[in-house]
Image: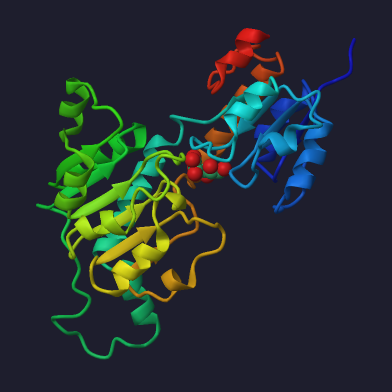
Length: 332
Ligand code: 8YV
């Protein structure tokens, strides 16, 4: 019998879910949440056949150089901008993500963040806790309605569609923009109408960003896009921070050119720009869109399925269900 495969797990994850790997491989665990620099990641990858990583770990050509036995990198998350897919493919390493299992949880969160932002919920709580609530008054903390308004969704994949379905129940009109238009049946089901990007910025009372982060979508919400938006509009970002030019956003919010923003993601996590921190009309959350207990467990379970499959074990041996670079499997 050959040597048992080795797997690196980049941060502590649900022990019982990870235990499924033990039957097939030796697991190199990370005892606490660490900021792995590229030298550290390269050193770990050099000694293993598979890795379970999060958005904290950037996997590119630089860290793959010495990873001679690496066969599969299973990313925890539907977004995989932390993976250089071309570099992984060139190195013959399968890459996988965790779609579907987090769709509804993340759509719930997107809606929660939208409501908190539009109705100034966290701002009100901060005000109350600071002892500012001295007398009830009619014109305190006036927000924006959701019902009867137009929701714009930029990026109409699974999560965007989940948000559209929720918006329907709230009596909102839904417009969307996406790289490609959805089939008519899906548009009907989501009660959503396709418009071009500029029209989306201009017509939305509330705009939610749910698109993948790529070189093409970096700063897609820049000063010019923000200038197209209504000054009464709210912007919610649950995708990736780099989609928005944060300095332009802070400027628009400070200058009254946009009513409010809800941000779960930032360009340089976990650092949040002081320009955003200083603003009253921004709801800031620490990238928790998919963070329900059940969903985070499901994400790890799916990543483990993908990892084991990439190592040639388990029910999907050799065919990870969420393979991002099939060219590698084809070559195998
Ligand atoms: C994850 C996410 O928590 O799925 C994504 O793209 O951003 C989050 O759900 C994150 O990727 C963990 O690595």
